[in-house]
Structure formats: structure tokens, C-alpha cells
Length: 319
Image (cartoon, rainbow, N blue to C red; front, side, top):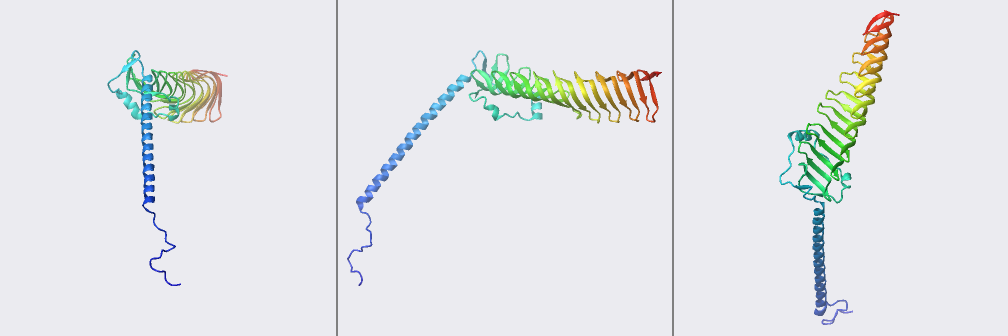
């Protein structure tokens, strides 16, 4: 066919929308925009009201936690640690709180420092007027506690530094050291193990400043029962203890090779035992206060045997 005539409409061409269609779309867009802005405004107002309610709730909860003035009063100054406290904290490092323990105190709130009726200063969390949760207490005698509290008592876990410089880090129950912990003594000894009623009690380990080590049983703060003591010079004792002393049956080996196996009393050889000398000689018999005492037999390294009655380590009569 010939070319399309000028002026005739092209059947494949779509005409642009007329002015009426464009105005309709514009109105819809404006309406959508107004609705969106209105929704955003409503949401903002809702969030503002919710934040206001939350702030009011938190304020009320905070006020519920505060102690009354008969219990404690606000302390206007910053609590201070003693030089000894600072020294121990520098040695041990900052106390580490435990999130798993925090979960026991969901309603506790942190308040400003308070001075208690007894003159001690507390800074930490409270609940219903009680020290409850994380907290630090500055005792007027110079002692310092940091850790967890339950109903005004140290509980679950914490660090106590005594005014003397001794310290305890570990588990607490109702205001006493109870459970697993570490105790640092003034003489440099460190105990790590079971604690009952503020004392080593159960299984534990003592490490001395010279690296001597005891591992064994404790009762009421003293070595009691089975244990092993290894001194820094290589000597060791393994056996029974009573009130911190070797008592009962045990074996002691000196650094120079001597060895005693037998009974002890107040850390002295006492009763039946066998003593191996460094030169290979052996005495088997009775002892008293570290001396051969009573009936016994000495066998020299060359095989010579001497039996008899002994007194303060000397042979009195041959048998």
C-alpha cells in the first residue's frame, strides 16, 4: 500500500492522558500524603505518651526503692576508699559483676550514696528500702565490700577487704562467706577452696609466699583430716592433720632424702614408725618428741643390726 496520508490518525499511537486524568492522580497522591502524615503524627503522639508513662513509672519505681529517713540519709559527698583498700584493689583488679546474678534483682534501682544509721556509707541498688542487688559499702572502720546484696546482707558473690588488709573474694550467703572463695591473709598466705561461716572448711589449697603449698581438708579454719604439704625446699608431708599440725599417721620426706613413715603428734614423730637416714640406715621402733624412745631396732647401711631400748635418741640397753 502507499504511504499513509497526511492528517490521518495513526491507529498504533496511544494518545497521552488528557488534563482530567492527571488531576485525578494528583488528588489521590495528595490524599495519600495527608493520610501518611496523619498516621505519623498519631504514632509520634502515641510514642510520646508511652514515653511519658514509662518515665512516670520509672520514677515511681525509683521512689519505692528508696530507704526511709529513719534508715538512711542521702550522703552529699563522694565515698572514698582507704589507701589500703586501693592497694588491695590494685592487686586484685576491679570487681567483676555477673549478669547471671543480676537476673535475681530485676526490680532493683541504683540510687545516690546513702549514709546508714551505723555510719557506714552505701552506694548501689535498692529495692523496697533495702540494699538489694549490686552495691558498694564503705565501713567506718576502713573495711570495704563490693558485690551483691540481698535484703541488706552481702549475698551470692562479693569482695570484702578488712580494715587490717586481709580480704575475701567469693560466694556469700546471708551475710557470711559461704561456698567457694579465696582468702588473702596478712602473712601472704592465700587460701582457695570451701568456706563455711567465714572460715576455710572442706577441701582447699593454701599457697604460701615462698611457694610452699598445702592441699587437703580444713575444719573451722584449720587443717584437719587428710592433706599434703609440699615445702619450697622440696620436702613434703602426706598424711593426717589436726588443728594445723601433723598428727596421726603420715609420711615425711626431707629434701636431703631422709624419710619417716609412722605416727605423729603436734608435728613431731610420736609413736611407732620407720625412719630412713640419708646414709641408708633404717630405724624401726618407737618415737617420742622426734627422738627414738623405747624399744626399737637400727639397721646400718652395712647391715649391722642394733636392737634395744632407746631414750632421747640414744641407746640405753641392748636387747
